[in-house]
Length: 145
Image: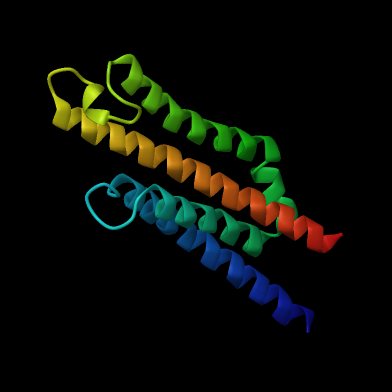
């Protein structure tokens, strides 16, 4: 019986190892194209967070905790929020309103809006992914105890 369990465990790990890069690439695609189509930072962040959770489910919580330390997740939470707030503050510094993207680059409001929205989507995506990972770890550890 142990051989069947071991082979299922190995198959699960191989399937995760093969699919996770594609899932993460799709998550980045959703974040990058969120301004022009369906999706965006939140949806892409959920996809990225789910790819990390898939890794943890396939390889175990201990291995997942070794790869994604709590401090990394905390830093990513903060970085995403700082990107979001930083873009808003840059808009204020440039003389616009908070998150008025066209004030970011003088003389080219279309490019400024495009870059501002992409930055916001990136910040939201990073934050959502990190929060999902943190919630998963906190929930899984609570159930183990």
